Structure formats: C-alpha cells, structure tokens
Amino acid sequence: MLHSRMQPACSSGRQCSARVLPAMPCMRTSSISKRAVQVPATAVTVINPAMIKSTNLSQMDRVAALSEALPYLQKFAGKTIVIKYGGAAMKDPTLKAGVISDIVLLSCVGIRIVLVHGGGPEINLWLDKVGIQPNFKNGLRVTDGATMEIVEMVLGGRVNKSLVSLIQSAGGKAIGLSGKDGGLLLARQMTHLDIGFVGEVTQVDPTVLRTAVENGYTPVVATIAVDETGQALNINADTAAGEIAAALQAEKLVLMTDVPGVMRDKNDLKTKFHSLDIRQCRTLIQEGVIAGGMIPKIECCIRCLAQGVGAAHIIDGQAKHSILMELLTDEGVGTMITG
Image 1: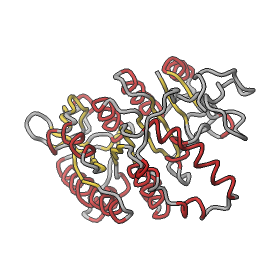
Image 2: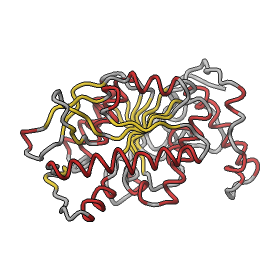
Image 3: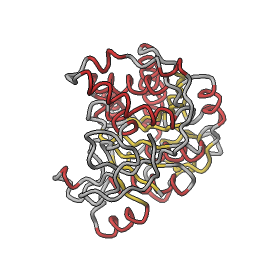
Image 4: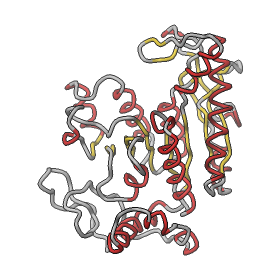
C-alpha cells in the first residue's frame, strides 16, 4: 500500500519511507508515486528464487524482500538507469560476477540499463607490458599519443568486450560501444590542463543507445570520445556517465565507487548521509566535508540532476549486490542525491 511521499521524520532526522513495510524503522524518502507502473507478468517471473534461497534468510524474510522490491520494480519498469562501473568491483572476479548478475536481473524485469565503464587498472597493466610509465596530474591520467592508443585498445576492446561476454553468459543481451560509435560522445581537448588527449564532453547523441535499449539490449559504453577533427579523447567515466544520463533523461544515475557514499567522517560509517539535495551538497563542499576525489563525483551528480535526471546515487561497488540494495530497498546502501 503506497502513501504520500512525506512522512514524519524518524529519530535520525531523515524522512521515513513513503511505504509501510515491517522492520524498517529509518529509511530515505521514497519517490514512488501512488499510481504504480504496471509490470508485465512475464517480467516478474524472471526473478530466480534460487538467488534469494542461496542466502541465510528465512522464508518469510525472502518473501518480505521480494515484497519490498515489487513497488520499485513497478516504478522503474521501462525507465532508463545509467550505471557507471569501475573501481574494485571491476578487479575482483566475485564482485564482478555479482554486478553482472544484478544488471541482468534488472534488465530482465524491464528496466533499461546503460552500463558506462572505466578501466584504469587494466590500462595500467597494459601500459606496463609495453613499457609506458603511467603518469597522473591532479588525479587525471596524462594521455600522450602512445598512451591514448593503449587506452582505446584496452577500454574499447578488452574491457568492453569482456563485459559484453559476461552479461550474455549470465543470460542478458548486450552490445559493446564506445563514444565514437554513432556520434555518441563529442568532446574537446582539455588543453588548459596540459594532460594530453583528455577531453570534456560537449555533445551527446543518445540515438544509438535508445535504439539498443528499445530492442532489449544493454549498451556497454567505453568512455572514448572524438573531437571535431576525429581525434580520440579519453573521458572521465563518471563525467561521461552523467552526461549520458542527462541526454537520455534517465530515471537514475548510479556511480559505483570504492566508498560507502558521502560521509561526514570518512572513517566512520555511521556518519554516512543516506540522502542529500543539491543545496546540502554545495554546503558540504564549502565546509570541506566533501573533498578530494568526491568533489568531481558530486559535481557530476549535480550537473545531471540540473538537466533532468531523477536522482543520482553514490554506492560502494565492493558491497555485494549494492546495486539491487540501493535501487530496490527503502533504506538503500549508499547516498542518494536529488534536486
């Protein structure tokens, strides 16, 4: 039974869930409307009970988990969610298998997933093999001509196609793309930073992505763009995902990171913010709470929200099934950012 969005605040100061469910005392505000979106029965039956049975939950807990997820599945059916995949979740085979499983499950129940990926560790491995020393400046990879060739081969080839193969082996349908394909990502070189062939996105043409998702495919996008002369440029994966989400008017952007979310004290998980709005994010940046590598991630979220994306989420890719936990439960596991 769905109720109005705003409920009395719980003891933590956050808004309680808009949905009444047992044993969930403190949750972020739900954005699910009273009128549920109808999900085809065939889509719902794709959920494999064995995935829940494999846990140590009781039968009632398993039923409660499915019951809690159902309104979210109804809400997001037919909607687009852009997921940026990177960090430790790309390096650990077990974590990678879990991420792929989550993506396939979401696509099977009618949610349109666009997967945008980085590949830093794999790039460094291949640079080492050919005797090129990785070089970074202010956290950004310095990408000369030789490095750009390796970046494009690794991101658009080895990493991209391995993810496509994993999705299809797990029962999904995927197609591998880079920003070059179909004019997806146009960019200009960031010459003022003196870091080589690194670009910032100036235009997104999402036509090829829409064609893919409308035909049941999960696009897997390597973040290589081109400038107006055809020169390949390396694009930050968070930034690319945000721009793609905005161009698609996605329901959500999910950034997978190696941290649990935005925290007031980075060493204390209890200080994690379960939800923030744009104004609060800007205040936390001014206060120095949001600092370092989290700043560009937050700015990426703010930009896409300002362009019409429904919500942005920062989650820990090292946590098992963090995508499903964040999207399909009231409490979530990361930080949700809204306008």
